[in-house]
Every structure is written in C-alpha cells, then in structure tokens.
Length: 140
Image 1 (cartoon, rainbow, N blue to C red):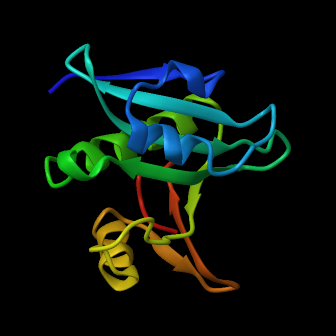
Image 2: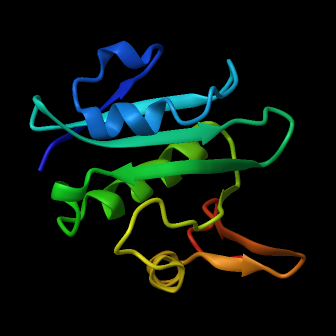
C-alpha cells in the first residue's frame, strides 16, 4: 500500500464528496496543516488535519478521517505513524489527540482503545486528551 500525502491549500482539489465534506467542516488557521491522502496514486482515501503551535512542544492531531469504504485496512495506523514521524521531524516531542468519533459505527471507547493500543495515554491533568511522547517512542 502506497499512501501519498498531498498538502491541501484549497478544498476544490478534492474529488471525494465524503472527504471534501470533512475538509470544509471548520475553516482552520493559516498555520494549520491539512493533507489529502491518496492511495496508489489515484484513490482519495483519507484526510489529516494538524494544529501547529510553534511555541509549544507538541503537535496536535486535530482530525484524522478515513473514508468509510477504506476503513479496516491499516490506513489509520499508517497515518498515525506518519503523524509521529512528522512531529519528530518538526521538533515536537509529543503528539496530542482528543479521540472523538466522527461517524457512526465507531464509538468513543473503541476509538480510545485504538489510540491506547498505539501507545497514547490520557493526560492526568487534561481529561479526554491523549498524548504520546514521540521523542522516545514511549507513552508519557
């Protein structure tokens, strides 16, 4: 599976109605990073949105959305690894996420379990926010 991350500057470049709907949900900030994920140089399969805070030591994974027909194929796991790699390359020590189901069929507990199996832990002082220390590759 070859996933290509295409940085988005405008939602007009997205042909998938489902993904286009996700990208237009919130306006975002100029500094935010948004990516369209393309599988095998053709099919649009997912969307990533990062909040960047240049003065902080963490990257916020604001949204990761895999189109319904592509779920269960390891795309989300691969994108999470790429998120952690991006964080390290940009000098962030941690990745933060607030697990919130974006569609039916995936409950909050299931989503939290998915992140926990990948090393994310709830922050003791910030309930509902999960973090992973990527500088060491270990949970905080």
